Image 1: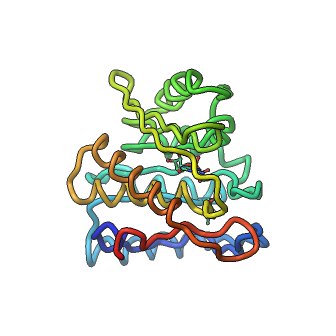
Image 2: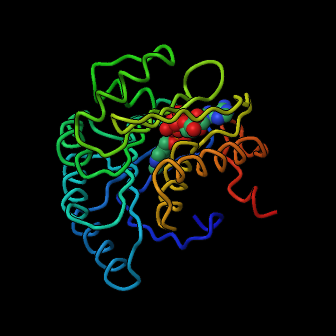
Length: 235
Ligand SMILES: Nc1ncnc2c1ncn2[C@@H]1O[C@H](COP(=O)(O)OP(=O)(O)O)[C@@H](O)[C@H]1O
Ligand SMILES: Cc1ncc(COP(=O)(O)O)c(N)n1
């Protein structure tokens, strides 16, 4: 967010112990702590966009949905389900709350292909299937669905759709180890661009350029899948 010129503020929902090798542990914060953090940042500094990430349980999904329902700023919902290493970050019992409470308040929902499979009955094996995935996600009520094709072989292709228009974003795949947090980075970059007042397709285009640069210019940290280079555009 800083690299894109906005001041990011966080509301922690869970604490994880994780590194380039995997997620070694996760602990949820009490719903009361989440509500208090949200009030602290919103009531004082104010917000121009909201982005959600790991929410862990149905209780937290519902608490966050309650907080952001009715907000008049754009909301990016990254329905985080499973980490790059396959570690669960959302309880199976929370999926229904994501479908019925969180996705309906999203301006943009940004599932990866595993999250599409968790939330809908669509399995994506090709770019053509991504259109069906977008329709299935849009049926839950977000204004836009961004289906991330990062897990498909070939080019890194994402599809943005609002049901009547579609936009394809394509970048060459970089087969390096600097991909921890690509989805979180993309969603945060979209929220940053929306906060600056851009329309959704323009925000996603800028965010895609940013995440591609962050992957391309990454450097090895850790023994597994290390972080992307968030400062690549500042140097
Ligand atoms: N190896 C890669 N090279 C280039 N872009 C990638 C690569 N892996 C993912 N991306 C892009 O990064 C963004 C995040 O996608 P993805 O990795 O599918 O999300 P997630 O982190 O939620 O699994 C998407 O724009 C995707 O196309
Ligand atoms: C707290 C948190 N949120 C999201 C992810 C997903 O990121 P990735 O898919 O790169 O592991 C993660 N590992 N940890």
